[in-house]
Length: 338
Image (tube, rainbow, N blue to C red):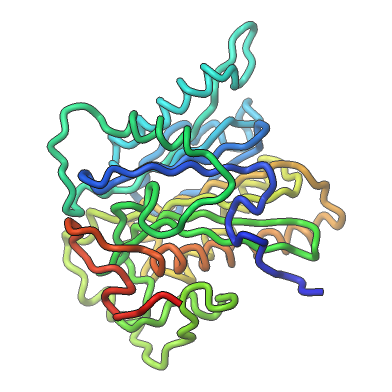
């Protein structure tokens, strides 16, 4: 028996009951991503960057009243992208979903955004495009989705190459499933010193992001030294980790905290004062913990591994459009699809 092994799709939706919806606007070079579930779910979050853009995250603290939420939104657009979550609230209300207060149902939809306003897209729009993007993403909810330049990862950048949307999963002891979905829009580099080798290479399964292995070149401060002040204005890594194990909000908070290790292992530098690095954590509650402390350890570590792999996969699968300001990973390193 493999203690850890990827799920059948190697996506966050290997966690049964989860659905992902993506939408993109090619002209603006941006997009939105929605995570939903067949039932309401427990969630928390952790921010370890100094410049986050969020909505309704206070409700996810363990000491707050609301125990379960209805959806999560990740979006491009900086502050404008937060409107995507408002549209998801409207759509969930029409579907009679939400937190019950008397005769009312109030959908609880936290969200986070990346800054993608300087990526070559047309930004002179008058009507906020993220309302329409959220509507399309909601209608695209399904259990299978593409990686790379999709959803909120459409206009993302990672250092000096295209970023993207990545996902990965692990099954633990043939019992629990853990998955991650990451939007990679990092100031730091995901590759080692401008080589095709990913920082996340030690955690790769079955050539899922090219199989190039570890780099022999290691100059850890090279990426910091060559950075310009303007680079600090346009970065953030955001994402979600999820499990079918039954966790409390406090345990979800711990899960989100440990999951940030996955960013640190896959992006250098990360968690800077200028980043908005944030990870949501989700428990669908389908499976009771058998060995409380041991199982929590395995779930937390699996989440961090999935985050690292998701980051590399999102960049590896990114594709270029004519308006992009940076080349994709495959274009830069002249790599053909496996």
